[in-house]
Amino acid sequence: MTDAYTSQRCTAGNSASTKTFPRHPFDAADDDKLHEECGVFGVIGTAEAANFVALGLHALQHRGQEAGGIAAYHAESGFNTVRRFGYIRDNFTRPDVMEALPGSIAIGHVRYSTAGSKGNTQIRDVQPFFGEFSMGGAAIAHNGNITNANALRRELIERGSIFQSSSDSECIIHLMARSLQRDIPERMKDALRRVEGAFSVVAMTRSKLIGVRDPLGVRPLVIGRVGDGWALSSETCALDIIGAEFVREVEPGEMVVISEEELRSYFPFERATGRFCIFEHVYFSRPDSILGGRSVYETRRQIGVELAREAPVEADLVVPVPDSGTPAAIGYAAESNIPFALGITRNQYMGRTFIEPTEQIRNMGVRLKLNVNRALVQGKRVILVDDSVVRGTTSRKIKEMILDAGAAEVHFRIASPPTAWPCFYGVDTPEREKLLAATMSEDEMRDHLGVDSLRFISLDGLYRAVGEAGGRNPDRPQYCDACFSGDYPVAPSDMIDRGFLLKAAE
Image 1 (cartoon, rainbow, N blue to C red):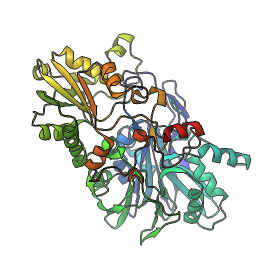
Image 2: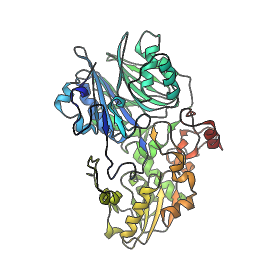
Image 3: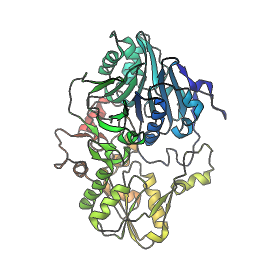
């Protein structure tokens, strides 16, 4: 296998293996959102498959902006991999890069680190990962989080495995290497039976594209048809960009093994009741994707409808916090008969900068990204609709901007229940004590944010919005909602002790 990255080393004081991102105005201190860990995409049966993968990853960029990688196979040059820091558009649009990835089968990954290294990003942590086995090579890209990775890593190291990264995903390669099965799909089944947590995996051999979801189906994975070939993707929006036809979702606990001739389906795990991540509906997925047969946009609009029914307030305008609050704000405005207005404008060109800002610029914070339309909000009672409140830092700054623009009142309406518990299934969540809802009541949060009122949609209301008319079944929840309820469907054994679990269950 060749790695095209190694021939093009980083400049400006960064080595090829490590990149440290200087603090900029919108790093973690000011970015008060939960982040998906990553997105995966794969194609088989099309000429220049890597180009299709690059397009698919571009559509999935919202799932991870830290780094990206593509692996491809060609009969003459074998397996080739390119891994880069930063955006897909900045790294996988150059002809020389894409020419290094020939072949009719390829997979890719976009990364936002949760497990493994953070801040001081290592190129060795960037997926896809590759392993050479006796029956041939395989590349793997993983979305999710392996909750028993620490225990697996210790066991594998004691038995002689040599790890190259800090990523939990590398455990899969080492587990496959120790399997006695005679082909790669069977080795992958062996490996994933040892894994706990959430995983949607896209993998490739010389002739097969493989997709697997964990038995609970926490993270998404879908199948598409592109011409005579096939595609696997974290979301349907990435199928659209390459002109692929959505076929179906990979079912919870299912493995699909796709050659250029056929698709075969297996269920290698013990069957379980699905617990798909409900926050995919609220925030992670793009609004133009389809989840569980439902439009993400329409679900978010319906969240706003439910929120207006549960938490009405007299006001003059409904204003979304760009961009994720927009569909819910539209639903809230329609249900409440209060005018919808784009009272906050987002600067679409304020991306990541690698220039160390001055303290004065850093203190501008959210104002560099968002600006209030003063003419719209002056003298008005404003309802701000946002998707979530995590630490509350951004919410306070937006409230100050609205008041500085002359608003008479500010009311927050949040399109998810209070985020009171960390996620261990592939989402970057602060420690519990840093989550505002873990330490404050709703009234205390209202006072802390300094707004006239604050209301969150209820957990039952959220379930109704995603199509569960009876709300949440407390005995058998239909989704993974651990970040709201503390009800973890898989014990995160590497991250929390027994006392935490008992507390979560109270």
